[in-house]
Amino acid sequence: MKTQVKQNCKFFKPDMPCVYHKTDKRKCVECKDFSNTDGSILIIKKEAAGDVLRTTANLEPLKKKFSGYRIIWLVAKQNMEVLKGNPLIDTIWTDEKEILQAISFFNFNVLINLDLNFDSLITAGISNTKLFYGFRYNKNGEILCSNKAAEEWFLMSHNDEMKKLNRKTYQKIIADITELDTYENIIVPLEKNAMEKAESFKETNKLSGKKLIGIHTGGGSRWQAKKWTKKNLVSLLELLTNKKYSVLLFGGEEEKETMESLANKNNPFLISTGYKNTIPEFFSLLNLCDVIVSADTLAMHAAIGLNKKVVALFGPTSPYEIEGYGRIEKIVTPLDCYCCYKKVCDRFSSCMEMITPETVFSAIEKHYE
Image (cartoon, rainbow, N blue to C red):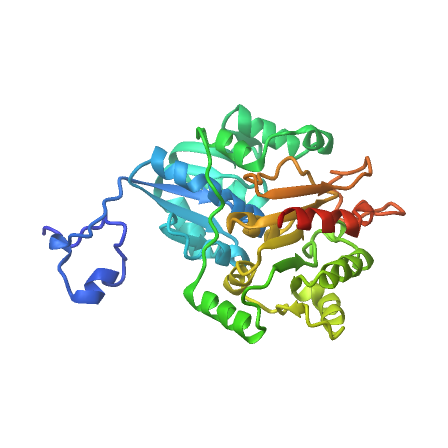
């Protein structure tokens, strides 16, 4: 029996009518919005949220190289929101059991695995693909690298001195691994409801027309060494609010205590955005700011993708891996132990402590010149 449904359309759903049929009851075979998919690309990039987000810089050139291919992205469930709403991703999969079974069953034209964790290497190893980029296990438990660029990244991931000497940005490294000629901007999806909520926040706090500085107060739960000291943060806030800059404080559950203590100073120029925002809300609130100050975190990557001016503070991680697109001022600790990749500092004076409030303040002011 000849099928009346075009399964090779990007809008096809296996268990229900597509969005266009739901809208106006049109027949599949007569649909003017048919979009043929010539093949499929499976991207495995699950961790961490900031890395997942900045990997989106490679999507546009990937779409051009494999025109007509459907892009499926496998991501950790807790990081799915940084991809949701991205117009270049056709399907987002999270690592549930049935999805992993599907990956071992289906054929993919292209497989890209950019993670070196056990689960991702196994998943890449069991995938059926014609073309492979990145990393995967073989049957002997050895990690296979797809090309020289992948091998270099693999070696850097196991040698902190090599990481310190590296001068390529992450985007360039990933482009080389996937054999792309270029990369584009980070794609930060902005959700309509979250944007409306951010605008309401702006109106409630009478922020229209004001110079807005966003400051992310944390370093992520896994990277205590990335955090700037509270003492320096307080000093910076005094410098900013004395000049009548309005400051929006950002952070998560780990920064709850810091944010509450800072926001309770009865300073009209100091406003907490809260620590329970969803990822879409977080992105939309960041989008209100002119300049964003952050350590090497998701906030920094999102700010870069939102085309904001960014002042980024670096201690235990590499400033050279960060592609700033001409919009970032990088402030690196003066200590020679920088780029140690230690999650917790074991020295008497932490590298982040040596970044002074005055230096950060000057960098912020430059963006308003």
